[in-house]
Amino acid sequence: MGRTFKKKSSKPKPAKNDEQLKVESTEFQLDLGALDGYDLPNVDENEDLHEEPKSKKLKQSKPQVLGIDYREREEKRLEELLFGELFKKLEQEPQSKKDTSKSSASKKKLRKQISNKASSEAKDSLPEDVYGKNLGLSSTAGRQAVWVDEDDEDLKCKNVQFQKEKGLVGEKATSETVYKQVLEKRFASIHGQVTPKWAQLQNKKGKKDQDSDDEKEDLTKTATDLLRKDSISLPQEIIKFSRMLDINKETRAEGRVISSVEFHKKQSVALVGGNSGVLTLFQVGGSLNAKIQSITFKEFPIHKARFSANGEEVIASSSVTGNIQVHNLVNGRNTIIPHNKQMEKGSYKDFVLSPDGKLIAYQGQYGYIHLMSARSKEWITSLKMNGEVHALTFNIDGTRLYSHGENGEVYVWDMNAKVCVHKFVDDGCIKGTSIAISPTQQYLACGSSSGVVNLYNTSQLENNSLPKPDKVILNLVTKISGITFHPSSEIVSIFSSEKENAVRLAHFPSMTVFKNFPIRNKGTARINTMDFSPNGGYMAAGLNNGSAYLYRLHHYDQY
Image 1: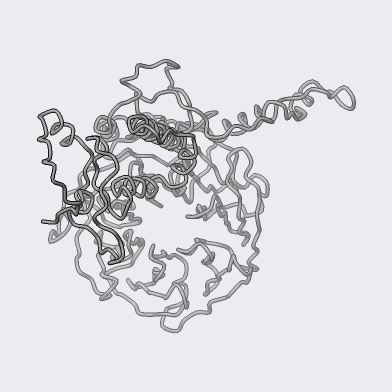
Image 2: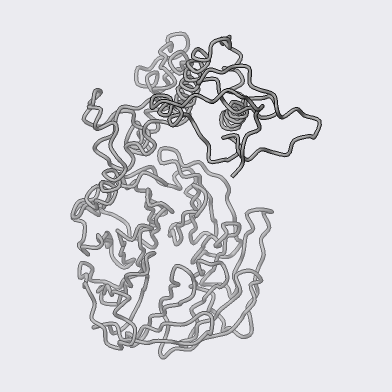
C-alpha cells in the first residue's frame, strides 16, 4: 500500500477524535488510490517531495500531489467531461476561493445549477407526451403544439364557394375566409375529421386540467392500455365509411368497363384502366383526385393492370392480343413483351405478381401455370395442375403460390423448388373461381362458381386433404369474381361481376358480414375489381359504368 512523504518532525502527532474521524469518512472519495494520496504517479527526481503543507487545519489537511490538490483537479476534470461547455460558462461566475467553506458551498451551488439547467434543456427537447391520442389512450394530458405559424390567423383568401352561392361577381365578391379554416375544412372533407387523433392537443372529453397522477402515468400502465384490443380493433356489424369523389371523375376516358383499379404501395397514387385501352394515374386526395398521366395502349383493351412490386412499372394484359405491355414510370417508355413459344396463346390474360418482385404467374390453359421473371420478362418454367386454373395468389413473402380451379381442388406450390407440396379439396366446391390469402397468412379464402366463400385457417391445411372451413359466407348467389383482404387482415371484400350490388365486406376475426355495406341503391352497376390502399384508409371499386368509386374507411387514419 502506498505511503505519503512528509518532513520528519519531533513533535508527536495529536490523536484524532471521533468527530474528526466522522468528517473524514464522509469526504467524497473516488475508487482510485492516487486520489487518497497513496499510489502516487511518477515524479521527477528534481521535485521536492518533503515540503510540509502550509495549513495544518483538519479541513485543509488534504494530501498534496506535485503541489496541487489532486482531488479538486480530478473533480474538475470529471465535471468538464460530463457537462462540457455548460460547466465552463457557469464556472466563469465569481467565486470566493479564500474560505474553504465558501468554496464548498459554491461548488454545491454550481452542481445544482448545472443539474437544473440540464434537466430543463432535456425537458424542452422532448414533448411531455410522445404518443398522444393516436393510440386511443384515455389518460392523455393536454399538450403543446410543436410548431405554430403566426401568419395562420392573418392570411386570408377569397371564399369562392360563398361567391357562387350568393351570386356575387366583381367588386361585390369581397367575402374572405381565414386560410387556416379553408385548409381545415378541406382536410375534414377528405379524412372525416379536422385534426387527426395523433395531433389532438386535448382529449375528446375536453378536459383541460387533469391530475398530476394522470400526467405522470407510468409506462407499464400505458403499455397495458396499448394491448387492449377493444381500443384499436375494428368494430363488428357496422363499419364507418363515406363515399368520396370518383377517382376518375376528371377523365372518364378509361372505357365503359373499368377492369383494373389499384393503389400504389409507396405513393398516394391510383391507376384506373378499362376496355378503351387507356390507363390513367391519379393523385388520391378524396375531395380532389388530380390526374397525373394518361397512358394509351393502341388496340389493346385492358383486361388487367398492376403496379410492379417496386412501383416503377405498370404491367397490363389484354384478352384480345397475345402479348403484354409494360410501361416504365421512370423513363416513360412502353415495352411490348411478345408471345413466348413456351406459353400457349391467350395465357397472358390473368396474372398475379409475387410481393418479393421476382415472379409473374400467368393462368394458362389445360391447367398450366406459367412463371415469368418480373425483371427480364422471360419465361422460366410452367407448372401443371389437374383441370383448368381459374385463380392464383401468392403469400406475403412470395415463397408459396396457391392455385384454384376445376374440380374444387387447391394446389400449394413451393416457389423455390417449383413443385407442388400440398393439395386439398375446397369443401363443397365444384368449380373454384377466386382465391386470396390474408397478409398475416392466417386465413385462406376460396370462392366458387355458386357464390360460396370458404374461410380456412392455414394452420389446419397442412397434411389435411379434406379440411373443414372455419366459416362459410353465403351472402352472394352468383360466381365469386374476386376476393381482396384489407392490409390489416380485419376486412375481406367479396364481389361478383355477374349481378348488380353483389359485394360484401366481412369482419375478422368474427367472420361476420357488415350490415351497412353496400348501400341499397337502385341502378347500381356491377363491380369488376376492388382494392385497398396500403394502410387501409381508402377502398376503391371499378364498375361497368365507367366509374371508379372511392370510399373512405374512417377507422383507419392513414392512406
